[in-house]
Length: 216
Image (cartoon, rainbow, N blue to C red; front, side):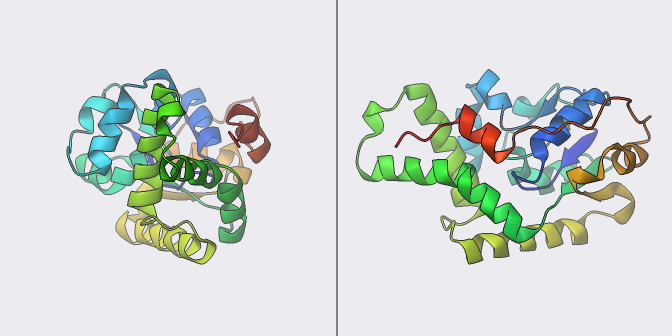
């Protein structure tokens, strides 16, 4: 089994909702950051990729029909090169709104973890969580944002990434998509029927806070 759909949008652009939608449409399983909760052994593999110690992403994504969100978007160029016929979905939202959501959720947790390391308190963290947060910070904070999560810089990176995807992916293979658009454009792009069920809406900022409470 190989990838049929690649999500190229940053986290906090409706990527978990898109994962659920793609799986409903038959593109299951779909890889998302949440998959690392089911497969904690993947953390070390993604960390090795992020640090340049490995280029073996195939062993992680083997068996998946789709991927969205970090950590897989770290290697989006490699994926579209490896699968030249794959459909690519760029999830987007207003950059200011995206930053506010990311800052309250994933960025807040990464900053907390960086502070834990700075204070030398890593030994007090659960080893599984420690490995996961090392991976997340390496993939997202370091590789994607160069270690700088400040508003202006992060938005500049966000916009530049989206523009690069638009320039790189042929128009016939690319869907620029906002989750509020619902099923119709997604199903038309993928050539599948529109389900009767509502389009999924999951992992709001409130949902994230409930699942990943601050350790402060």
